[in-house]
Image (cartoon, rainbow, N blue to C red; front, side, top):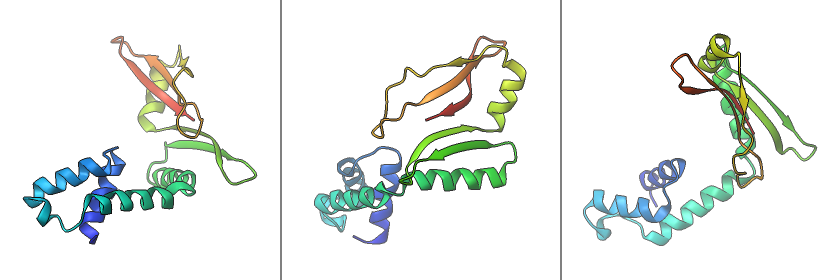
Length: 143
C-alpha cells in the first residue's frame, strides 16, 4: 500500500471507520476497485498492524498529547497515575472553557460514574453542571 492509502486507513480509524468502509470509500473516490491500488485484505492488514503498533503506546500517546496542549494553553490541567508496569491507571483533565464554566456555575456538580467501561476496563466519568439556561455542560472528565 502506498502512503496515501495508509493515511486513508489511519484517518478513518481515528473516527472509528473500519477498513471495509474506508476501502469502499476509496473505491468510490478512485472510480472502481481496479483503480484503488490495494485490496480489501491490504486495508484490513494495515489496520491490524496499526492497532498492534499503538496497543502498548496508547497511554503514553494521550499523556504526550495532553502535555503539548498544556504547553500551548496555560489553563489546561491534567493529572495522571501510572502503575509499576508503566500502564496508565488514572487520568483527569479540564480545559480552559471547562474551568471557566466551573468558576461561573460550579455551585452544584454532578459526578457520573455510571458510564460503561471501555476496552481497558476504565470508567469514563464526566463532571457536569447546569448553566443559567438549564443546559448541561462538562467541567472536567476522568478515566
